[in-house]
Image (cartoon, rainbow over all chains, first blue to last red; front, side):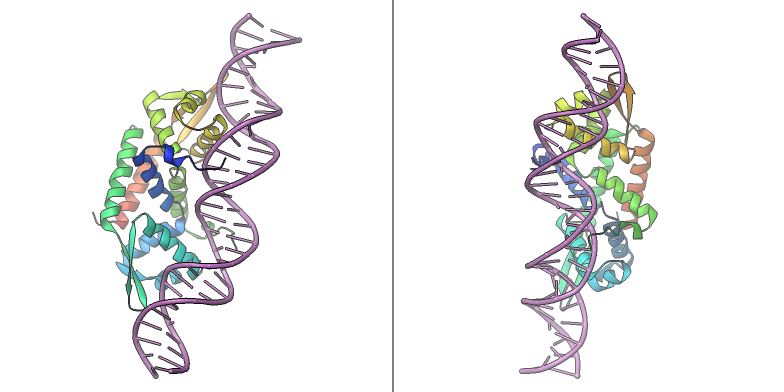
Length: 105
Length: 105
DNA sequence: TATATCTATCGTATATTTACGATTAACGAT
DNA sequence: ATCGTTAATCGTAAATATACGATAGATATA
């Protein structure tokens, strides 16, 4: 028990659920908004804008990177985090497709 | 430590994250699709369509009900689960708004 | 080379989620 | 009244998530 059964569902639903999971913490939603506003920015800047420690922010960034909603490239000492437009676009359209499928509106 | 800091974020982001959390398991995504296909159905029907036990499915239904994406009304012995179109519509539009804000597309 | 800065990772604690079987409560039918 | 059915809840176990401080590694700069 407590072994996840997620793998027994269909690929696309697993992927959708995974993207939703990445969005399931307000800190991560705020990080996306921050990155949009600043276009590109480093971890330290983000830490200053959130009520969380550096290590916690780093973990949230990792989660967003894991599903591909952001990228993080090393630039000397700093790491430049950016919105990944292509993947966000895909997420947007797939989530929209789900809602259209499921909701009469 | 490990005390959640979610409450320190803004109301709308907390709500968005909460909706995303409800969508963050493929079983719950599939449940939404099942309810759409059947328009209304009881817990037992859903259990038969998922690789999960009755009690686990009941928990997933509870989570979807918690954020208002579905309704569940007692009808004699059975419970009739339904898509909540109004709330799904709201979720759809708010999530769409987020993506439009965050993604250049 | 030494030092300061930046960020990922480690170790840790606690909370939450996922999953199950068993039980309970409510109802219908016999 | 008893029995079968349905679904929520309880108890439990394991996995995952959230959060922090401390540390390590990498790189600028003095």
